[in-house]
Length: 371
Length: 98
Image (cartoon, rainbow over all chains, first blue to last red; front, side):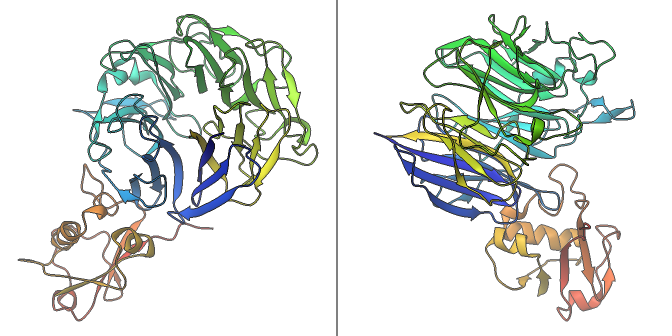
């Protein structure tokens, strides 16, 4: 039957939630690293007991914690993220150029083939890689050559928050940055190109179709079709069928096409999920109703999933890294809110239940499907 | 023997209880004390001073002898009472509103 382990990062610590394949009864472990912001935790697909956690503090900076026993015990590993060479500058809020300054790790992406290799997406936006299980980190500086001087921070900071590794092509990596856009490397991260053709940002950019500068919130892919990408942009849900070379809008009948997370069903590559948020000025669900929207057609045609979710007086947000799917049959879906709830569905979104109600604000949710 | 008091989160990170006692060779300064501290507890590297610049992190303060020494030069001598171990060198997480 299998079992699942949810890795939940919050504003005040990490939590590990476990259940058997029925996904009805959950055990809660935590808080780990109590009092610290845990931006993200993710396990190695090669060795699921190896988990990396980004532990950050406005006071005391960045720590990287690694567990080799499925989150029961943790060891701090390397926390030196030094930009390669002279880091240069990027756009600042006042229009001046501002030097790159490391602030935190937003996202870890462990290698699909080597448990000692892991990628880290940083703020200020850069991609780092460790080949020794997190002890040391080296920047892949070619990314910042993709017009990095034109990138600028959004309200949440200039962060590299999405890293996708192509399971069929070890040299291909996608990343997304707020507010710079999406980028692709076809040579293992040495060189990069912007992949933002088709994105339109009339409310955010003076040139709505600029090559870089778009506020991409999240990208998702299905492992069986790594050339098909789905994007939740600041506004607009987008789709690419050519590895990001061009994008088409698939927002369709969504009540709002603003939002943060987007994910793909584990077994149905044309079934995708988003959580519409009212607007960039009002970061809560439209009409006070928390609704996940599912498209079974790869976009454009969306249905509201509401069974078990609050349908009145709900004003939480769901952040970009806070939704995930397991690979059991039926596919499970999970998301966490800024109100501290983690909701789960064991039937592909048809029905939902809260797993926990009262955690600190949830920053990220990842799931591991275990034997 | 130099006495150093760490804030809660750094004590947890370094897995110590109470104050830390350090041997510091040569002049007793912010830099020499923090170097000795990080040598003993490598996990604290980057938490008090920035990895690259070695500058004090913005929301960290250094107190001793009822004085705020945060803005003193890193190689300025610390008060005699700290050098002699009579008073402790206190690393503080600054107030941040709320």
